[in-house]
Image (cartoon, rainbow, N blue to C red):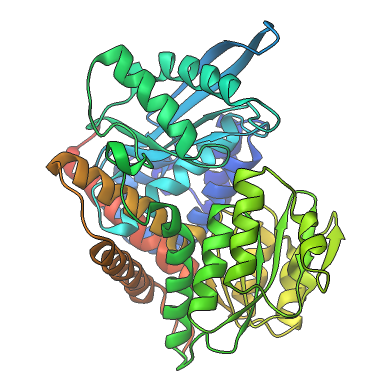
Length: 451
């Protein structure tokens, strides 16, 4: 056996950094997983001999392409598009498409890497992938967005398929954009297949898909609290973001008896001491989604609230917290503030919203802390159910899907308990999620040999 089979964690991470220069988000994601996995595989010779962790940390392929489109003024615009296909050991690649100026290879590689373990945790046969473009849909007309989506799909279509790679929505990509891309895929291939999820109900979409990520994160949060004999009734919640995930997380918190104090966007956060009830949440949904407005406008409609420009909500005292905006929005200092203010539990609605320092703070404080790969897996879980419905040419009822989502989130929680129980009443959910997801993917890779 080669000497390098048993390199220590610092040496392994040095190799990851060397192979992926100027990709801090991807390196951070690998580090967070590797810290837990290294201890788990220490005495498991087959994983070392087959270089499983090294292979998972190297995407199967990264496709990069030019996207040309014409704006309403007749100007030719050029963006860059990507699809990262990380691992398909347990099923077709599955993961969202993100349209945002911050999109680059590092961000998409980290998301595809995380997606691999998240999808494994759902128990559904889905591999991990992610794609997107540095295109910014904000300020663009509907026809400009349509032209961009069509051009993007004109290249992407050759790399995806119902049994190959099934993209979905993400930041900047909702039902409208999925519709434009699906229409172009159908035009080019002359096929009507379940090649995208998050579709409209009229052409193969699934009920509760918009709600699934936010609802699932709250179900996971409730499962964690239940291990301490507690629930969400009467608990105050601080939530970041004001998009699809954040508003539906807020909605479910309210339904389960909690009080939501904050929502935010890139401009700052709103603090409503009276709490966001369903009427206020519906106002935010309409204002942000249909009017493309800013969260600061909330204080004009509801004057008791205050807007805090350029700030995140983590300084507001709370019982539970749900970061639902974007990666690395919750830093080490924020984590210390939450702990000092008595926060009992945190479930990530976004992907890797807590930086590595913050993760270590939460672990040291033995907080009930759920990483995104576990707590926000509800969205991709219902996407997987949409794939099943497309394959069967059927549609399940909302009650059936709600129960399936609850069952899947409960199952993920149980997997985290199995591998993350540290004794003394403390569960390391990060460790539990990482090991449970890794083991499923790694064992499938072992079965295939060196491919």
